Image 1: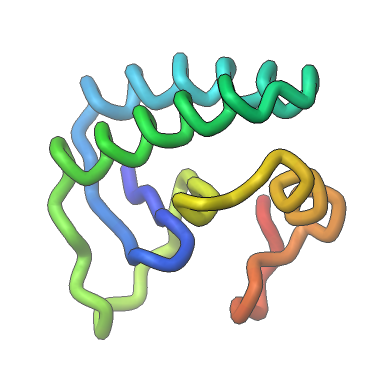
Image 2: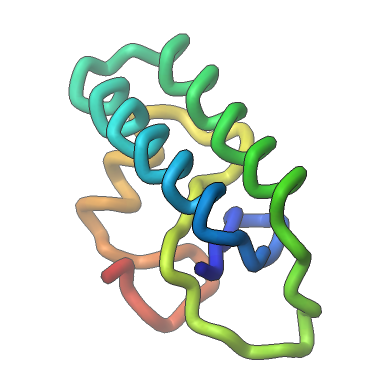
Length: 97
């Protein structure tokens, strides 16, 4: 699975990390839904750490489509809501799908 962390780059993660990330994603969704900024920051941080520590960085010059996209490390719930509503990644021509 390819995971993009906005502002950092892309990482290839294995099945075990991808399964853990899927669980964390549900927690991220819940935090956004509840407007719980503290929970959102904690889960976003845990998700990014998981990807960085277990993944292999994809070289910047290599073009691959991300299967999963994490927001900027310092993103807020409001910014994520806007990204989801717009369906676009800043600086990217393709929408979130």
